[in-house]
Image (cartoon, rainbow, N blue to C red; front, side, top):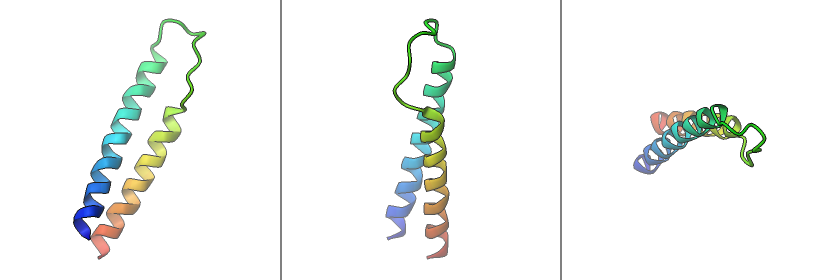
Length: 61
């Protein structure tokens, strides 16, 4: 069971890094009138929060 939890931690970490890169790219865009459909900061926070929760579960069990 812990292998699945650590896999979830890895998936959350990858998602957090990818959303951080997407947020950085969005901040550096040339056409400022293009509105993004995804709030990457919220996605990054949710991924980090989920990763911390999964890591806590994996360490406790």
